[in-house]
Image: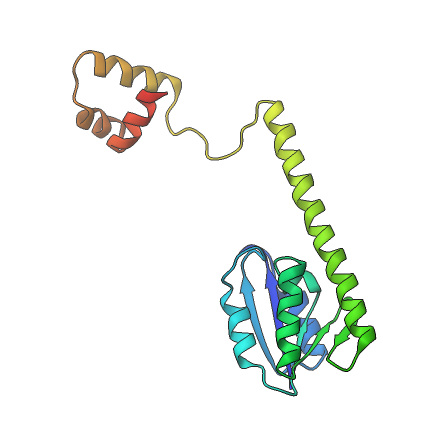
Length: 183
């Protein structure tokens, strides 16, 4: 039996392309995740790995959909092979089982390329964030209060107004009032 596994990194991304490819390839059962590949716990992957039996083939759209990094990918595929379960990646057109030395070589090469690509993406993302910071854009959540409201907090505290009352006036928590006072 062919068992498919598909993953996208965020909830807003779409699984359709992967699901269509897995169905076209003849997967009878498909498990999915909408989570970063870097996460340790991916319920869909865990369910797929529990579901497959000796003689089955686990099919993924691309290698980077399966493992966090090359070591993790190799560990998963080696565990599958030890259980008599084959592995197939559609985009790289790699089928790997214990009997295929060429498949093992190709798998290791493509796994290395997938990890390299992921590292490049991380480096480019970090460089983009650094460039944005250099231009004064810090990212993250915008400030809740305006400068005028922060000045009002300071004025009210100097006049002895209780923090609880200030929080009620501005409709914020006391913790937020204290946070703005610390800045």
